[in-house]
Length: 85
Length: 349
Image (cartoon, rainbow over all chains, first blue to last red; front, side):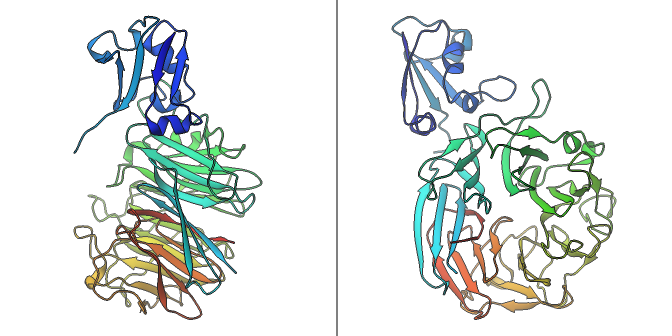
């Protein structure tokens, strides 16, 4: 089972839950299964521009993006972009 | 009667509770931390707190709380623009109770939504979204925001910066531009059909024909549901430029504005924090500043001004909330050092 970790604002929006264990194949499947999926994706189904996703410490943009496959032991971390100081 | 002011800020929602004197206040909050609350109300029908919530990473949303204190919130389940289109929902700006149980929600880019389930799900208003003049709308400095939604009798009004004001007589199916005589000094054509930069529009609840607007290019009043407008600046106003507007629910000839120097210098006029009041439909305006700091370069945003039967209230971008009972005429600072204030509303209790 992959583990998805959420930042505090998203955890609040998920009913106070910051960690989800999910039996899914890809990053996209994992994010879409979350109760906060509408905050991660825009109405066109695109990941919002300032939402960063890391799988075992690697930004998925440098891999296969949402199609990045998840091992059973994978940790997916959602992080809002940090910019501007 | 006691009053509750939902104060939307750049960093969450605060609730100010004032007693009958409007001099003693308690500050609760913040709640909805992490969200910029562009506008929040207490729905008078249910007592629910309704908030237009925006986050620079996670987008535009809407939250509702039914516990009376904002401790628990439900986020909207469905809110957005049609898939496959060029437009995306950039922000939610204004929530307004409608008829029966309906809620209206204005947003950027110049869009309006309607909910029949208290804000769980929202249906896009296609009449405004597909309006034939949309290609002549343009965003103001705050985006192309639908910031004013008013429901009076059988009429619906919206105002969008910078598209102008529109009226619907068929529940939102179709919308008629109502911008006659309203200037758009920044356009090649000074009086276009659409494209005016309305900063705030309010309809008087007791006089169905009476509308007021604070525009980028002046203060205006209409006596015929927006079919024509009269420009009212001068006559005591230091500037026609400003954002907030408030009315007296018991007297349609009374209005309040907080002018700013100009579009290029968006601070209160003459280095003073001053509310200007008219009691004669805008023919004359008087400065009302008793108790307000006389050396101040403040700014009050378009949603930052509210009134009820007894008082007038506003919040500044520098985090102060000011309140006055109309009968006494003196302003008291209800709170200070809040985050930048985006909206103020007033509710009984």
